[in-house]
Amino acid sequence: MANIPVNKDEIFYRLALSEVDHVGVKTAKKLINHFGSSQEVFNLSTRELMQVQGMVLHRAVSISTFAGWERVEKELNYAEDNNIEVVSFTEKNYPNRLKHCEDGPLVLFKKGAADLSAGRMLSIVGTRRITEYGRAMTRKLVESLVPYNVTVVSGLAYGVDIEAHKACIDFGVPTIGVLGHGLDKIYPSSHTRVANDMVSGSGALLTEFLTGTKPDRENFPQRNRIVAGMCDATLVIESASRGGSMITAELANNYHRDVFAIPGRVGDKRSEGCNKLIKGHKAALFESVKDLEYIMGWTLPQESKPIQRKIFVDLSPEEETILAFLREKGKIQIDELSLQLKVPVSMSMVHLLNLELSGLVRSLPGKIYEAS
Image (cartoon, rainbow, N blue to C red; front, side):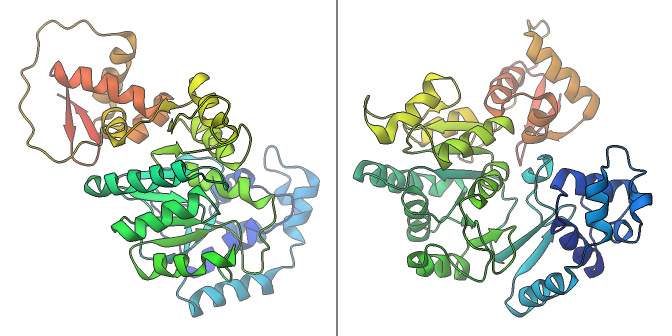
C-alpha cells in the first residue's frame, strides 16, 4: 500500500469510521478507497451508501446515523495532550508489514520512539505461566539478538511477554508492547514500570483501542493480529495447546510470516503448544539465534563477495517463478515478494539464496533483491 499522508480532518473521520457499529476494517477500507476519503463516506446518505457493491442496510444506517463525534474528538485531544502519535493505515509511519494485512487497523495510537517498520522485527510470545527454563531461554535469546539489530514485539502480558520486554530493556534491544486496551492505563498494572521504561527508552506502546477501553478478553485476539502482522516472524517460547500465543502463531501463518517454536519435554503442558506447532509443520524448530540467522537470512554484516553467473542452471519451478517475478517487477523487498507470491519468507530465502549462488539474483541492503 502506498504511503499517503492525510490531514487532521481525515484522521478524525477515519477514527470515527473505525468506531461505527457493524463496520469492520475491511469494509471501512473498501469505502475509503471507493469514495476517496472517510470524510466523504460520512457526507453520504444511507441510499447513496447502498450503491456500494456488497453494502448491507444495517451498515449503511450505522454510518449515516453515527453520533459518536464527541468521543472521537475527546480521543484526539487526549492523544495531543499526552504525546501520543495517531497513525493512519496509509501513512509512512504506519507499520509497513501491517499494511499488507487486510484486517490491519485503520488507526493506531503510539507512545514512544520505536520504529514500527524497523528492518528486522520479531514477535516473542508464549504462556503466562512461564517456567524457569522459559525465563532463561527468553533472556538468552534476547541477549543473543543484540548484534542483529532486531526490534522485539510482544503483548506486555504476564509470563513470556513481560520477560521478553524486561530482557530487551536490560540489553538495549528496542521493544514494542501491543496493548488490548487504551493508552490511558497499563494492564496488568504491575507492569507499569516496565512500560514506562520502554516508552522513555528506545521502545514504544501501541494500540488500536480508545482510552477507557477495558482489557476485556475479546480484545486480545484482536491485539494478537497486530503482534503477528507487524513482524517478520513469530517465536513461541512456551505454550499450552490452546491460548493466545497459539492464536498469534496461527495468525502469523495466515499472513505468510515465519513461525518458530522452542521444543519442550513430551507431556509438559506448557510445551504442548510448541511441540504441536513443530509436529504440524506450522513452526520451525528453534534452538538458538543461528536458526533465525539461517532461515530468515539475518546474517551479521560482512563483506559480500562477487558471484560469477553460471551459464547453464537447473532451476526448480518455484525458483523460475521468483526469477520471472523479479525480472518483471525489478527491485523488491523479500517480505513483499513473499506476500505477493504467497510463499513463506523462509522458503523464499532458500530459493533466493540458490538463485544468488547461481548468479541470477543480487541481494541489496534492506532485504531487497533484484534479478542480475
